[in-house]
Length: 341
Image 1 (tube, rainbow, N blue to C red):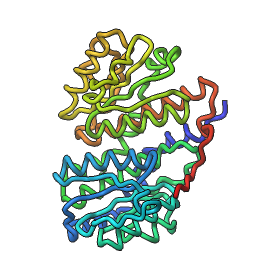
Image 2 (image 1 turned 180 degrees about the horizontal axis):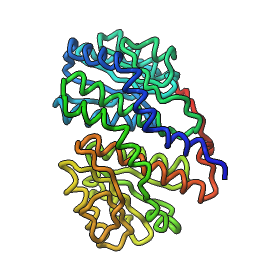
Image 3 (image 1 turned 30 degrees about the vertical axis):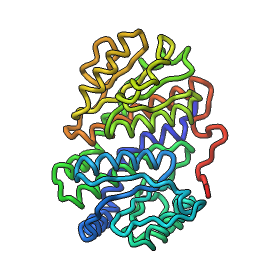
């Protein structure tokens, strides 16, 4: 079978990451300097779809690193409801692969008028979002032909981490970000195919995580829906116990994404408890006993460790999509650029 665009773009992730860090290095430094000068009381993100999941990842990274609160803003606040938010003390991070969604552009423009520092992460320089933002970062993922975002998701998250390291002067995080291309190359070779058998007779599943790994779980659940026609929902491994776990049984698989961070014990314990109830449960941790261990790359940093989980997942779900008879490059009813108002 001819290789899909999605598969090629997954394989391009290490090089795309290296290109971002090389070609957008000055813009990242400028963003860090602008944040130091602004010294925002809080931050906000504006995005949709996979870009919103990248924003969620960056939100956790910022909160864990700086202690500053980060809120996700609904783009309709400006485009439909016409609300003028009090954002004079804020920095606003918008993330959009195309930079063309009217509602996102409208809210970014409104935030800038309110006095916020506006920073855009986009794969499309000179797009409307680029023009409306004060600080612009080309995520340099290169052309992405598959409708389902992969390398642009990863590069958006990497760009956010690189800005965070520059803003805070966190040398440890900076080194971890610079090491990511090599870790992504290792992650490409990981085999998550044991998950396939549990999905053969399933229609729904949960993807669990906590902290940065919850953002990865959200992205994974979306890709299950987009490319493989599964009803997948992402939950915090703590939140799933507040009702949703009642649906879990032997025909309801659970994918638990744990990083080497402070939440690993919590995620692993809950995954093991679910596995003991008989549900097919898969866990990215050496603490898997009743659940099935999936391989992972340990990067040596808790935040980049979580990000590396998405790479073997992307490879798995692309193959799953084809095995189920779908074209992962052209998910039904979806288009590459979604222009919501």
